[in-house]
Length: 99
Image (cartoon, rainbow, N blue to C red; front, side, top):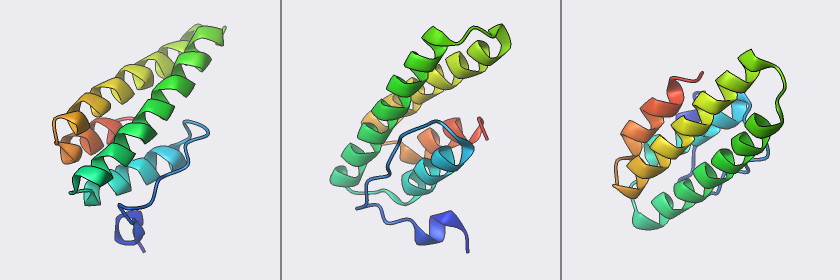
């Protein structure tokens, strides 16, 4: 079963890392979110992703890994702005680019 099929937009995704699995869960929830309340949850998840990536980018010593995390950090910010503009499908597409 695809994640999108089991995603409940009224459920908040726990974001404790920026693993592909976490990103997939956020994407799945973005794809089924339509109500204002759902979008607020998605913004909170993207805020958490943004914060975690900022921390890791600031402390990562490996230049290549830091660049990857920095791009994801910028992508999380872009996705957040799209959700704030009520464009969750476009936000999902931004994050899907990191999978």
